[in-house]
Length: 573
Image (cartoon, rainbow, N blue to C red):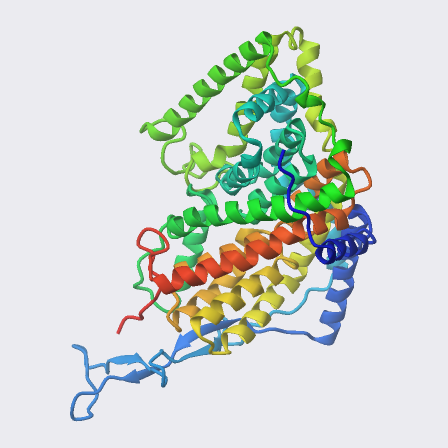
């Protein structure tokens, strides 16, 4: 076997230092509890000190259109026609106007203190909601019901051995990273499914399972904004971008859900190549230096051949999975089928059914689809191999997956308090408006604005979680302002994808970081947050630099970012 190149002593020692420093951080439960306490104190200080931020709206500076004689040109109603004022570089001049209420009074954002009667009441009354309302919680729990059953009955083990026989050892990394970069089509389920699968697959072929875990996590989280398939998040981003663009140009046609499709598809290949390089040239050599390959459990390689009963089990599992996929495809594509088109079920009164959201129906049932696609094939495999014979076998397999996420539930409780405290106090929006206004007033060239915006989003990932929530705050400021310097809404969204994705693998606000840590501790019991951060930092840096450079190169080519998605915006005259 060809051994990966060894990292330089300097880079290895730097990552080792990062790991040691990071492991001095409190345990995740205590860390999020302390962060929540910090928000409580800062909100009280800010409220007492009178901190305030006025949200701003960009406005064009109009000038009258004049004829050859210098007289104002009038429209049919006799009103002077205006046009945006241009600066020396030929760009429209824009000013930031503070938002006001319906009475004309300035709108101001002020921190809401949690150390008040209302604040203390809210912390107590919302404690359960802050935990149960975490987007990751339901996904993790429901998904693990099916995943745990399939794992307990041996479906994953047989499938991984089969894949190991088919996939060349040297091509495991690009395959894993590419799958991860496309996993966003299944919402956030890729965080749950792929990393443990990749770790076990690497171990089965005699490679470091931690390297497999890292490659999968890098693809799923670091490449979250890439992929060849449109997702539900694309539709949300398009809607918010359209609304933001109409602030200055109400006539601009709506942004399509496929506005970044071409760029996303090409980005998946960039992420694959970058992840391949980092895994095989930086991460795995460092892991081998810390723990030689002889210490890795390679028992799975001693008997890779599938037994006849396992082959029969995989065949039945494959048939059941194919039938389910065909049924889902029919439900999505056939007019009148349950998942066809968009819309919400309504009650007899005509109002939407409780809990239902607008949007494509198929995107609302991703988690149940994942649950069934693991549960039923897993049961078929269990029946065929004899692992599922009585109802006690079924119940024990269902419990199997839940047992592995008990530590995550404890951590998620405290994380939910911190995230919601930050939102309740308004400190998240105040930071976004303050930083955004400072950046866009700099009047910088478009390529530099792209880079700085990516950096701003990266920094924002450490103070505000959620791809969609951050975009909802940043888009109304940045999209209109960047349009004034010739950046299309689609270009701003592409830059946002990069900044939001590349730090997902190291920010403590990513709730799935805790799930990956649990899997990592299976192979390295003393691993802490510092271990995980030092493991993933090379991916974060490499992805950020290469992906941003790729977007700049794309900008200079002038190619559209997606369907009807130009790079440049030209204001209407």
